[in-house]
Length: 104
Ligand SMILES: [Zn+2]
Image (cartoon, rainbow, N blue to C red; front, side):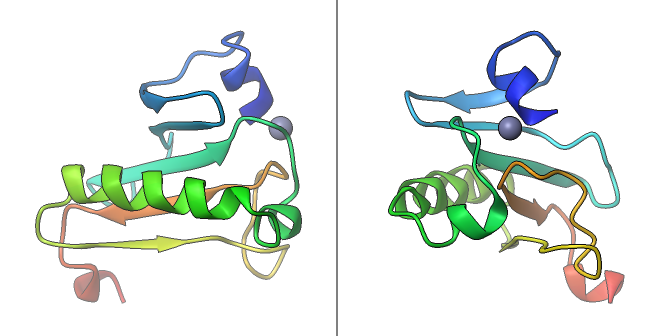
């Protein structure tokens, strides 16, 4: 649960943290670099994408992704069951470290 990671009651490999935003490694490893960027305050994916905090979350996500994926990357959010969203807490995925074209 992402709120537990924010509260530091659940371990995570945290790469960045400020007052409002946190970046940590995804437990999934489909591609070499899979990072997650979240607002620390709990909000749904829909709320995140309509809240002014998205500008800050997106800026940090793009910065950290560029640091870890020199040759490029992808940033995305999954919405709902068909989007394969597995955490209610809103978040951005930063994925890369490989040519994503070879992963369809
Ligand atoms: Zn949460």
